Length: 260
Length: 56
Image 1 (tube, rainbow over the protein chains, first blue to last red):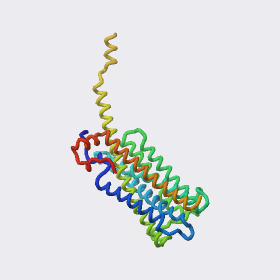
Image 2: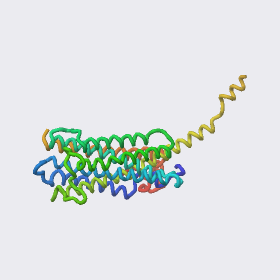
Image 3: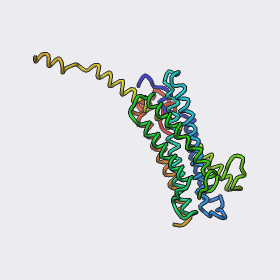
Image 4: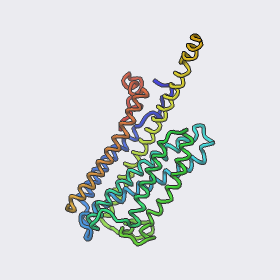
């Protein structure tokens, strides 16, 4: 058993187990509500059921990218003061960004399917769709940057800067439907504005958002712990490598000396 | 493709993507946990199962 065995080596605790089970149960109930109980829309018909996935997916993606940005900022500010170089914040940023990318991808897929039914086409290069795909690609680039071999602190700083730059696009995506004339409809729910949907559809959408938030939180916590495990494994591998190099006998030069 | 079929594909794809990603995250944690010796501790019974498990 390695000396550093502690809580940080786990990816599950009783609390995350409860969260995981809650996510599964909530997901099943969400499917029942979204697919069977919620009525079809007068204009959109059955396609409205896609919005119970599409809208919460982009919300959790926004939330994940906000978390990534805050953690990246904290990493940049505090990395010099903390013993571990602030890598805790770097891990939060990385795990949240990955979950955000997954949900942005789901937003694009469900949006394309919804668009096919409603608009008659999978894709249009309008402002909302274009900025969303740009968001997806920039955060994919962020994840790729995190995988480049470098000193963890240096790599973390580069990634943090990229995360902050990438975040500029989040409000642009959200307000693109207000700033430009787009094919995409305006936000279904918005602070300070009367909801576009009511009744069972409204509550189903809110419930779906809650469910996706639970699932997203569970994924971020587990991904964080997996990143921590990867770091411990890499550190132990490096220690073993250095140790084995130190114990290596300098056979090459000694043998040469004997021959000459 | 009918509206119902499109909705079914959308929901199906979403659940498959989330399930696959969740499975990947959990199994990666398990694999690395085993490399680091967490599994061995579980088998020897030195620690409680709930403290060291790497699954859901």
